[in-house]
Image 1: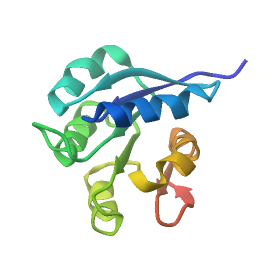
Image 2 (image 1 turned 180 degrees about the horizontal axis):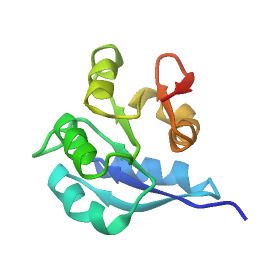
Image 3 (image 1 turned 135 degrees about the horizontal axis):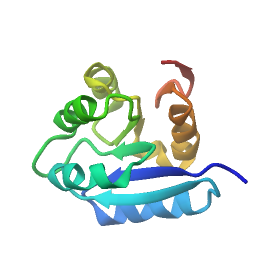
Image 4 (image 1 turned 45 degrees about the vertical axis):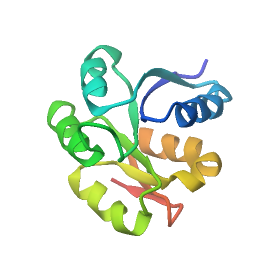
Length: 137
């Protein structure tokens, strides 16, 4: 029996959360344990969900994605955070790694690389969209 990994999705757009759910539903060892549409909602839910990884959009109402990464790092220093954003990877990859994210993929690549990237990060790797490679964290 495969170990199960719990994913917590923080994304303000329902259609995108639904797309992630469809991708994850095909994987026998991955499950979405919770969803939040804002930073405040994510903070309220996270303590009770105990996810193995957070999938985080940068553009959220209220608390920004980068601020949320900083808060998550203070509260849960070892919890992996995968940023999934359409904000422009060249600008944001370096920034999100500096504030404590474990990886970044562009929303344009999510269908082809989401599951692989989640797996890389769960096993203590950093994974970035552009290179499509992983290196030890």
